[in-house]
Image 1 (tube, rainbow, N blue to C red):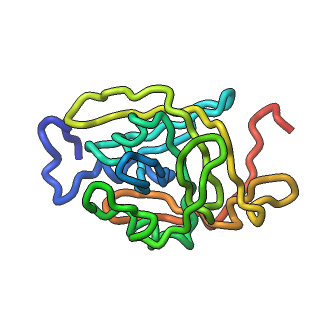
Image 2: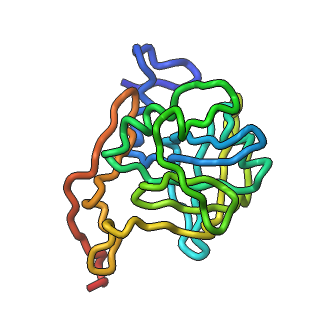
Image 3: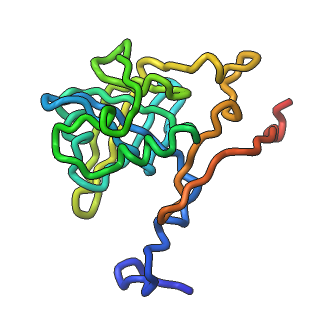
Length: 194
């Protein structure tokens, strides 16, 4: 099958949503004038080491985007398999100003380097200062870039000085209503690296 996106695909569901998979989930927390907000984004990733930087894309005008544009900060909480139902509950379309931490049952804590809430029991949280919002082609598509100013690591996820994803089994997005869990990890050295 071949199709041009502008012509449509003719399938019951958009295959583009499932092609780039698995995708990490950025569980974005923000604080705004109307309260705290928590929402998952599957267009998320790390983009640079020094200084550490992340990106996520918002494909609609959402509270997260309004809050971080006003405050200049946001936090990225990493989603463990154990938090899948809470994460999913936080994706509900709720009235503006509703605290998704409370409605979804996510434990809340304060960030240290920014004025923003975080998921208290997340395996890791990246505290971020907004560096840029890029308006993308299409209706209400935005790319959000941030510099990481603080990192929380859950103690039980540190093993022999390494952040061990097998301790919390990261949840990832596949497309449609499908998700995956990292269950098997292996080491593969790059050529020339011992």
